[in-house]
Length: 439
Image 1 (tube, rainbow, N blue to C red):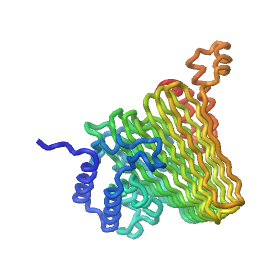
Image 2: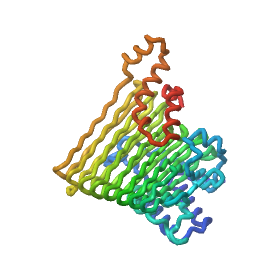
Image 3: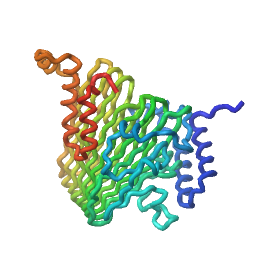
Image 4: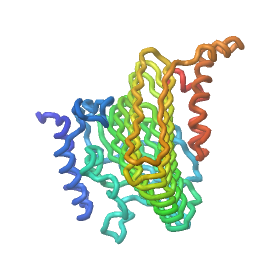
C-alpha cells in the first residue's frame, strides 16, 4: 500500500513528474529548476516571528495540505464559467481550466497593435522565453513566486506595440474545478505595454465547485514610457480553497497604472501587489473591495516603491466583514532618498457586520526624502444604527436595509470601475442581497 504524500513531498514529486512528461524547452526547464531550488531552500513563510509580510495570515494550512498538481484539466462548461465570472462576448479572452488552456472557451481576438497569446505560443523566436517573463517576479525573492515558477507550464501574455490603443479589453479567466483530490494550479500572466500604448486587462479567478484546491497565481506588468494600463482582478474562489495572488508592476516615465481588485470567498486568500515607480511622471491608483463571510480570511498586502522622483500613488481599499471572518490590509509606501516631489496616499475603510469578525489594518509610510506629500489612515466600524432605523421606519425589512447599506458602502469602488462587464457583475451581486450573509 502506497503512503500518501503530504506537504513539500507532493510538490517535489509533481515537479519531477512534470519535467519528465512535457518536454519543456531548455529555457523553461532552467527557469523551473531555479524556482524549485529557491522554494526548497526558503520553504513557505510559516514563521510567526520576524515575518512582517505574513504577520496576520498563517499559511500553515497550505504548507501541510497534500495538493497535487493537476496534470489534466477537469470539466468546466461555458455556462458554469459565464455564471461565475464577469463576461462580455466582445472581449478578447483566454480561458485556463486547472492551469490548462481551453481553446474551446477562448477567443484571443488579436487586433491592431495588440497580441493576446499563451506563454507556450509567445516565445520570442520559437524557443526563447517571452520578453519580460520572470523580470519582476524573481523566484529568489518570494516562496510563492518560486513555487509558481517551478510549475510554470502555460499562461497568458498580453502585449501592446508602441503607440497602440487596444480596441478590446482582454479577459484572462483561470478556473478551478471540483475534483476527487485536492489539487494545485499555478497561473502565470504577463502584461507588456509598449511605449505610449493603452490596454485594459481583467484577470478572473473562479471556482466551479466547493472542494479544496490551491490557486498560486503570479502576474507581471510592465508599463513602458507613456503607457497606460487599466487592470482589474476578480477573485471568487470556493469556500474551501486557498488562493495566493502575487502581482508585480514596473512603471516607467509618464506611465500610468490603475488597478482595482475585488475578492470574496476562499478559506485563505491573499492579494499581494507590488508596484515600483521608476521615473518622473509615473503614477498608480490602486483600489480594492473585499467581502468576507463564514470563517473566510482575505489578506491584502500592497507595497508601493517610489524609486524615482516626481511620481504619485494612491491606495484606497474598502472591506466588508461578516460572521467570524477575518481580513487584513497591510499597505506600505517606500519613498527612497532620491524620490523627491513624491505624492502618496493610503486609505483603508471597513464595515464590520458581526461582533465576531475581525479586521487587521496597518497602512505604513517609510520615507527617506524630505520634499514629499504623504498621507495614510484606516477606519473600521459597525453598521450605522441610525441608517438602518431610517430605512426600517419607511417599511424596509432589516435584511434588506442592511443589504442596501452595505451596497451603498461598496458602490464608491464599484461605480469607479471602467469595465462595464465587471461593474455590472458586481452591482448585480450586491443589489441581489449578496451582502447579507450569502455567497
